[in-house]
Image (tube, rainbow, N blue to C red; front, top):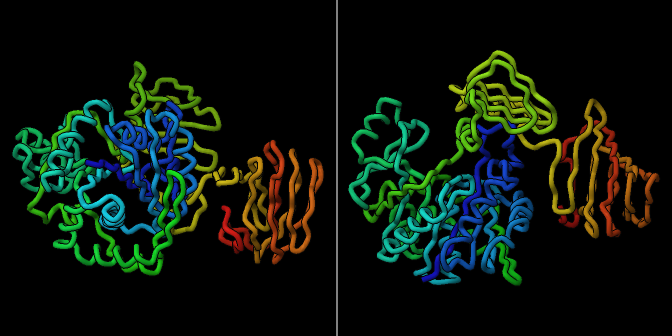
Length: 471
């Protein structure tokens, strides 16, 4: 029996704005131990018995960020793990993600291979208890069951869906209830939280999707047949065809299959679990002080109770307040009442409707070649600090609306500007005119740091044509 964890890394996590953004979603948020939520998920999957391959389904634009996260922690695994990627051009919900993974795994490993589906943005305690639950689920999956994992509730919770159970039998799935209904559920002892974790064989989920979600299955199969596949030593990557992927219905696996199938089983789990869906749940990852405050960063408090404060770039002071969430980043500040943290998503939605920069990315963005940080921006200009890793380069590219002035702060730059190729040293500069094909490279062994001044009538990040894709 081959067990293959499938990590589903999709969704923005808009309720965790301003840390979570479109190009830096919730799985990449770093916790107090320095690891991201995604890294914790990968390590949890890698520690399961007999796992030698992990499949990650994620957005194409997040591939390099995902790969970089894995590269930091892959040596912590006690065995060699092969990483496979299925890259979506855009989100189509969990049914499409699971269908593509199941079809791919069945083709490579056969219908009997067991998928352990794990959302990338959940946190759990007690690896031993998790592994025991997976072992139980695997046995049921080998019997041809679609297995869901239910978390034993420790409170009346309105943010989660519920599963009504009788032993290992699923009686029904229930949408997120109000507080009174949730309390009644807990009192009966028949209900578990719906975790979004699943276990089944590739053949079983394909068979059930053919019965209950045939359009999802057939359109995903057609898309996979026309998609680009790359592979190497311990690595494979499928880039789903964007034109055909548009035809795949946007529906969750719960609605598409789980709530319709008569072939279900549930494993009741006793480990601590959270999908970190709001700032209150995120705050629970940190220990409170004597006044119930949880602090991540440089915060000074006076007469403050039951607050969560996170700051990364500066000191934050609070006086005479209670029951607040305060999250301060380099370019955005959130202040919310703890009773209303679910509504943070409405702020994110407003920012997206306004095409405000802070819904999409942070001031500092990581790229395969290094990082860039926006230092200042105003009408007609933008200033960036760009750091290029040794022996790395940006793509050959061109901008229609902006010119770029590069000042080399440290290191040595190799510059392509139209037909010219030349070296620029520290304390020297060069100029790239709008419409010119250009490339920046670091041929040296030390980081290359430059200050880039953009000027023009439009300075959006989407004013770029790439001729060779490196970033």
